[in-house]
Amino acid sequence: MEAAKLLELDLNCSLLEVESQVKTWMSLIQSLPEERRPNDIAAAILMGKENFLPAVTTLLRLFGTIPVSNATAERSFSALKRLKTYLRSTMGEERLTGLALLHVNKSTEVDPDDIIELYASKKERRIRLL
Image: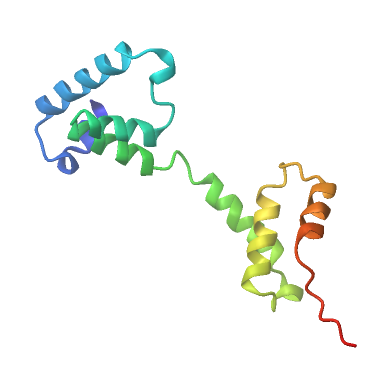
């Protein structure tokens, strides 16, 4: 309800209506079996729309767009600064994007054999000149 008070102008209804919809939402969620409860914000928004709870749906959409922090974006820009140095200033956008994604997701395990298999299964791109 504290968030609803802050976002009252975005909700287009009174705080009393918001409170009743939130209580309905909470009782609905608690009545569902564990496996049918929404496990992410998109599923929760859909469930709010299905049960016609517009204030809850709006609150969930606002919560889904408000970043918890901007640390991830800052890390991405720092990585980009390290990648695009003076010596690499002529690098194309596609290559820069690929390198940035590799750098940001460097904790992801990549199996070289899988990559080799992927390229080996692609069609041959050389033109045979006879």
